[in-house]
Image (tube, one colour):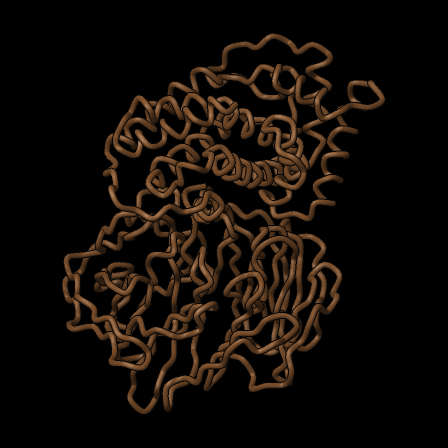
Length: 584
């Protein structure tokens, strides 16, 4: 094992310098486990190949951020396992809707070969293992696979899946019991199941490996090695990749109109656009991911290359955390859509005065307002119930990380933080001016934007810092920056008719001005990699992609209203509703 670790570090160093043979060595080392992890969770060899390929492409594009002293495997396994869980959930939901059986036991672990080559009938033992795994939830299968195939201990699994250690132990016990029952062995140990799972045939493993290597090699050949770089820990890289930063990060301006921007601090001058862009340009994105927008015709998904898809005639929408689904709503209806299937409706819920629908960071719960009530339901559209009878007209905010914890504003200006499943109050702030927006900077810091100030709060309601807004300005919107403790916020001063966008760090607590311009700039969306803040500038009919760093160039998409609907006339403007993830 020590020799492999030394080899891996050497391969990684040389691959970063441009050695394709060393990258291939890394690929061959990690492919069997990555593919098997994906396959055993999703039970679909085609999806497993796509998920594993996505993981290796992410590794190529983050190659210069890896620390050579850190193993690549944990990063890769976390990404593959997380994406596999999402894919398994989606598959189960579709099959339940279509009334299909989840498992066909006449092929290895329940699925046919990619090239439709007839597979031998399974022996009773393999059929039993397949049935035992298929009977588990995606999360339970992930825990079993990480324990047996990847050999992680419960503490590591809890960290990777963002679960309490006790929950991991329960999942492992359930999985072992299910397989033991199917095998009629009475009991089964981790080691016994590990031996069985590693010996099972996985369809198309070799051909999938060669197909994937060709894709990975091509991506590596077009990559530009970086000589000077800052090493990032694998957990941060994994978080960024799962959030959707697994594609190339290159500035692809939305059009020819690129304007310089002036860096300024909150106590100094302003960052202002020096000119208005007038040349219409394709609305491509300067960072990986897909953008969700709304306009008078409904909800659209814009892909990185500028291609867009209309997914429904709804006035408002929001992403699920991994971009597999879209929650869309009207005044009397909430629906879950699959954007990859174009208006494929998973479920519909009839409710009065639906507003501010938000998916939890785990993807397992959805919160929304129905009139003055705050309600929560399970992600498959069931178990809808009232969490609070009277709340302010402010979107609730899910705490990131494990658990289903929700913050919402009460009529007297207090902010309540509760466990969504039990309704148990964790803490509550003192009375204060009513917030206009809530967001979590990280799992321990809640940000409340008010009419005249912004507050950062820590459990149990302790004030970390309060920052007054500029004279005469009122707060508009918050946007947490992925993978950081930063939050962007927008303010508008009616007296000057100008808006300003600030960035505040929950650790340093000092706001920095990102941009200022005429009109109301209330709609913000971060790229999944956290490098660009999309600012919707309706007064100029532009989208601005503002870099988060102190130096950089703003990419401008001009004439976005005309680009979306040339026949609509003046006033039509697509509003961003979220920038999320890679292709599902």
